[in-house]
Amino acid sequence: MTSGGKKFALPAFPDDDGAPNLALRAELASPTKSLIEHLKAARLLVAVVAVADDIGTGGSDKSSHMAAVSMINAAGQKGLLAFTGIDSLAMWDQSARPVPVLGTQAAQSALEDGADALVIDVAGPRRYAVTGRALAELALFD
Image (cartoon, rainbow, N blue to C red; front, side, top):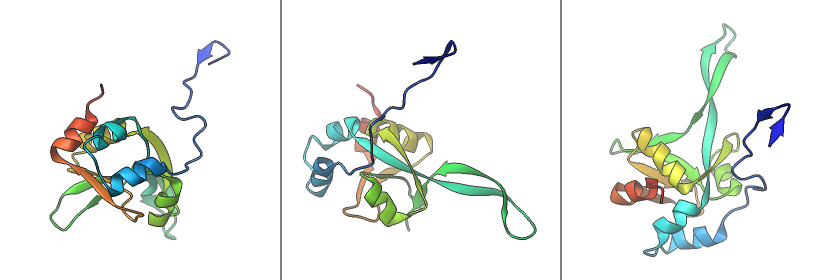
């Protein structure tokens, strides 16, 4: 797409309304050997939230930035959060903003951030963590 001689990239998911991928959810509930292949091509929503950089004297944000969300479990392992739909994102945090990405991209981001896992639908309907060799395989783009 061009405008005034400048090229603009179209969004990766231009018609995405955030509806859950019910087939993927079913697969996450009862994983098969093909789960990683399905996740590679699936649209996931990575959660981003506002993080205050500077707080004013009255306690209000003077400046902030958006950051992807990760969590750390009791064992100290870090997991990047991703969701199968806007409904599961809202179950976790209604103020978080969704960024649609392919499963492969989410896994790559998790690894680049030093995460041990890609945690999908942390607040439900069914939490699933991609870890270890499966996370490395998911991050590989075919």
